[in-house]
Length: 92
Image 1 (cartoon, rainbow, N blue to C red):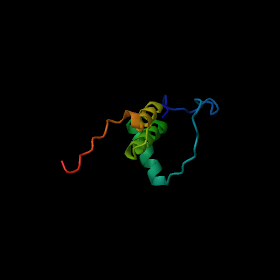
Image 2: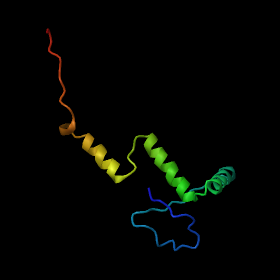
Image 3: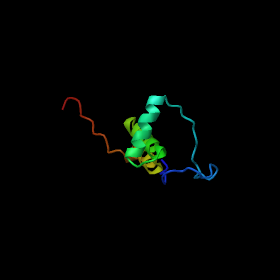
Image 4: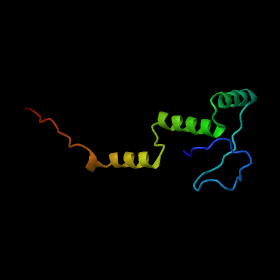
């Protein structure tokens, strides 16, 4: 996830990091006020709170968050990296 450098008011919307995506998300008034208060109390931008929430959601569902984590997970799935399986002999 991209780390925000704080409040982005007045910044050029076209000047976003390469590979980033924008999505419009709608909140009900109660949720919006709670998030706004949380961002003010914690001195974090709404983008920082969203990054943290999506990172937690991905980890909760066992999904890699960074490219490094994704590569590490894909390497673990290769049988060559698994320890040899010892089978019990029958009748022994």
